[in-house]
Amino acid sequence: MNKKKTTKGRSKKSLKGRPLNKTFLGIALLSLLIIITLIVALNQKSDKTANINQTTINVKNVTTITDKRVEDIKKPVQKQHKVVKFDEDENLTKIFIDPKNKDEIFKNQKPQIYQKQKDETEVNASIKHEIKDVEKDTKKESPVKTQDKFNEDNVSKKIPQEKIQEKQISKKDENKTAKQATQSDKKPLPKEEAFVPLTPTKSLFGKPKLVIIIDDVATFEHVNMIRSTGLKLTPSIFPATKAHPDTPKIAQGFEFFMIHLPMQAKNFKRPEIGTLNVTDSYESMLERVKKIRADFPKAVYINNHTGSKFTSNFDAMDRAYRALLSQNFVFVDSRTIGTSVVAKVVSKYSKPYISRDVFLDDDPSRSAVKRELENAVRIAKKRSYAIAIGHPKKNTIDIIKESKNTILKDVEVVYLKEIL
Image 1 (cartoon, helix red, strand yellow):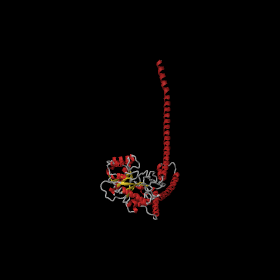
Image 2 (cartoon, helix red, strand yellow):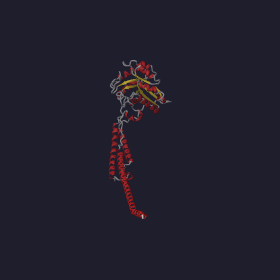
Image 3 (cartoon, helix red, strand yellow):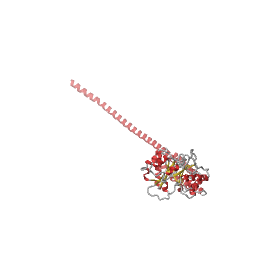
Image 4 (cartoon, helix red, strand yellow):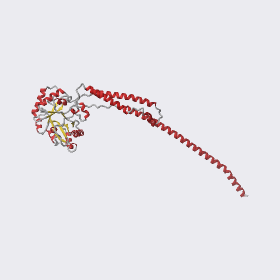
C-alpha cells in the first residue's frame, strides 16, 4: 500500500514541474533578444555621434586653415630698413665692415629710401585689396565642408604668389627708372670702390697682411705694452705738447711709427692741445703741421684723433690736406664718423684713399676685442690685407698677444708701410 502512494506522488510532482521550466526558458530568450536589440541601438547611436564629432572637427580645421591662409597673405611684404648709426669719437663702434653700410658714407639716401617705402606701401595696399576679396569668398563657403573640398574650392580664390612677385618686380623696375631719372641731373654717387681702402701698390705674397695701428701712444708705458706683443704693431703717437712733451723721444724707440693728429669732434669734451678746428685758417694749419714735421722728421703717415666734425667738413679737410701734402705727409682716415669726406678730398688731389677697416676696442671687453680681431682677420683673408685700429688698453694688448698662435696664425701682422 505504501509503495503505490509513494510512486504516484513522485509522478505527479514531475509532471507538475515541466510547464514551469518552459516558462523560465521563454523569459530568458525574450530577455536576451531585448539585450541584443539595445546593444545594436546603442552602437548605431555611437556611430552617429562619432560622425557628428568628425564633422565638427573638419569644420574647425576648415576655419583654422582659412584664418591661417588669410593671416599668411596679410603678412607685410615690406622689409625693415635698418638705419646705420655712426657713433662719433667717444664710442667708435665698427663701421663699414658690412658692405651693406658702404652707401652711407657720402650721400644722404633718405629721399631714395622714402621713395622705396612709398612704392612698397602701394604694393601692400594692392595686396590688402585682394585679401578682402579672398575673405569675402571664404565666408560664402558652407561651414560643413571637409578639408579636401575646401582645398579644391579655394585653389582659384588664393592670390597667386607669381602675381605678387610680378607686382613687386614691376614696382622695383619703376623705382629704378625713377632713381636714374632723378640722378641724371645730379652728380653721380661715387663708385663702390671709393669706399674701400686702396689697393696696395706693393705685391703681397704669402699670408694675408694685417696692419694693427695702436692709437693714443703718449708714454713710455705704452711703448712697453706694444713691444711686449712681439709683433709689428704700428704705433700712432700724439704730437708734442705740454701734455705730451716726450713723444718725439718715444718715437725714436720705434722702427716705424705714425702721428696721431687731433681734429675737432662734435661731442668730445676733452680735446687735445693743438687740435685742428674747422674754423682754422690754412696758414694756422700749415704752421701746426710744420711743427710736427720738425719734431718727427722721419714720420710719413698721419691719422686723425677724434675728428668727427672736422673730417665731415669738406673745406676744413681740404685746407688740412693741402698743409699735410706740403710737408710730405700721407693721411690715413681713422673713420670716426660715417659722413667722412676724406675720400672726396684725396681724390681731388689724385691721391690714394687709405682708411681703417675695424676698430678693435670700441667695446673694451675681452670678448668684444676678440670678436673684432676675428673680423679684421676675415677681411684680410678676403682682400689680402686689412687695417685695424686699437688703443694701448690692457685687454686689447692681452688679446693680441694671446691670439698669436690662434686667431692671427693665418695672417701676417705687418707695419702699414709694408702694404703701401
